[in-house]
Image 1: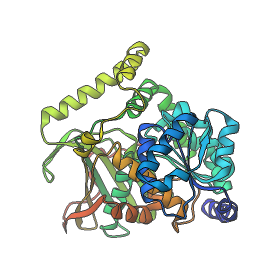
Image 2: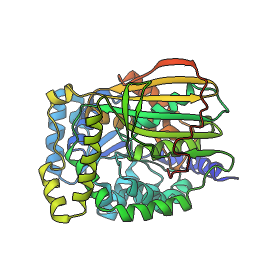
Image 3: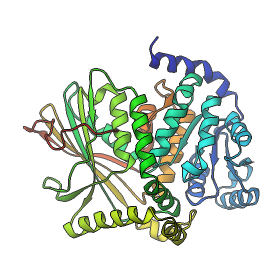
Image 4: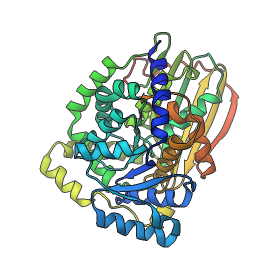
Length: 425
């Protein structure tokens, strides 16, 4: 029996026990900015049969949140409340033991998320979060992947704008291309949205831990098995003008490319050789150059603790734009895919990415894990591996666009020579 079969067997064994638990979904961190948006989405869209609860450290804030929800959705008046501190191992273990799925919005996850992941891995509880922190994701793989496979838990990180549209969008693009041939996909992200205090704090923390992040990534690569008969590359790329899309492509070294690479490594549909490059797409070169300079300045500032604390204080965790600003926000991720003589351009698009759409993606992922018929898998997995088709269908029904813009013959070789060296994913 290979590792995949062991994981599937563990999940089948654990499934009846999980079904008997008190809750289908526990939303932890519900009183935060994105947490409340997620709670509102669940109150409006969770089926009546779904047993869900709100959890957090502050009972008063939880009660106030429930009152606000009930004013708009009367059925939410009966939603149970769980007071728990994820930093307390006993509280985390109790939370994990009571629910089939735990959805955590509490970041930075390196500070506040470690014990809850451990508790879910121990209890065979499905876990998902909004983490875009590469060090945290790699560390959780090293510590808990093997145990989660044994208990049947699915640990799914990056279930918001990081990295659902990129991961499912790359998968959607691959599905438009021929099977069994080398494929290449480039993703180009555009948006007019602002970021939250929590996202900003997570980014600064990641920048400040660059050396430790690199060491953890190296350990992850050594421990994470690669496919023996297939190759997956996620090179950084370079600044260039993408004439076919009319965009300047600026390499975007976020966790998104790593997530796409891990999905590609796990799923044979991505072909015998797969390359993915991840970019910010901008219309004007000065904007591209300004973005590079700004990212460099933020990285430098994060190395100085007093300056890092000052910057963090300027946008506190739990704060975000108001409803009117969010209503004007949008995102678009365009994918240029090639392989087997075909060329496709696809797009995943929606509204405000960091808040409204993140809450939608996160809530739908939790509902998907709790209620949908999914492929048997366990351990640390990506959204494309754990929920690909089912979650894509859910998001389309919820208003996120997945569409093919162009589909044509292509004479170029999909094995692009640019950045030919392997890159970690």
